[in-house]
Image 1: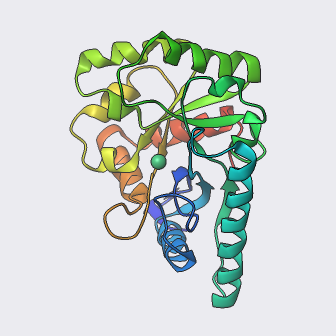
Image 2: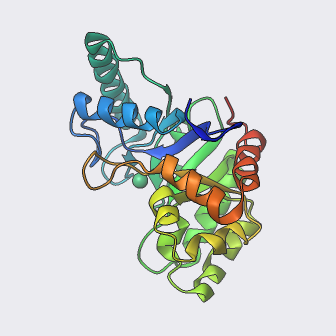
Length: 244
Ligand SMILES: [Fe+2]
């Protein structure tokens, strides 16, 4: 296991990654998947959630689950052929928040494996009231814990944090992308100081322009804010029931 420095180990969970082959705009095939996972392991990542995009307008949840299963089996077969040991994999999804998503049958099948955690991607167009209502219903009707994927994409200016405030009040967890931390321009601090629980995710898609930078992000966080911050992140995983 790689070490941050003597005595402090990186024991990372990647809660957002597009490494499953041929299912979305992530890994093109199983060989790329294996490269991505091996790269993650070399950075100290021990658990990786497979979170391919789920777009409700594109396919049903059942069809998505079948495709995800197929992609996962293809990956496992290829890893066996190549005699590569994979990290622990959790099957999940990055669920695009669309109108009516909270009323979808079998929404719980999109949670990260064996948990009530759902990774939600907010819309990029301006948010109407319906966005907040949908998230609220996902939480109250399904008793799910919502993890908001890369909130930094929606907060360009400090005052944009106000748009996220209702989600904080609902108990959402924020998943910050590793590359945002690595390229730190003061944005990460806003989230860390928001009082909202934060976790990291790579949101890696491939091995060329969207590689995982989770290990580098953890080290950067430790440099900027102290190693206790990494402990805090691990505590969030404990609280939301995702620690291994
Ligand atoms: Fe993503």
